[in-house]
Image (cartoon, rainbow, N blue to C red; front, side, top):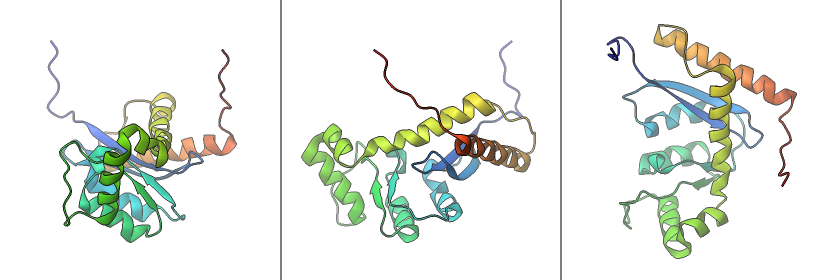
Length: 171
């Protein structure tokens, strides 16, 4: 009754979002692609200056730090260390800085000082995409699905250009 068709498969959308809520880059991958493998492709699609990069723990690898530093040498990289992370000279210097900061300030203090909350902008972009464009892709071919996702991002950017809602606390 609840069998899933063998042809169906998950797709993952990865967004690079700026502080003004514009989607600067987007990549669609299959379910087997790890999150940290798409950073280089996302970085290549960004043509503006970047001062702050934040991501979740899945991106905490030396390869991600190196890729980000190569594309944005002056950017502040804010990625919390994984739970099993340990201090080692082989780690990227900015990665070690984040690890030491988390141990010194505690995770909440580190997030506050390093403005880790800016990551919520990308989470908001993903929620906007799902609510406005939809949860599903209509195309069958992967290449067409990728184009469909990019069109959806373009539509969201147009909406953002028209104006974001002003929200405030009432009670």
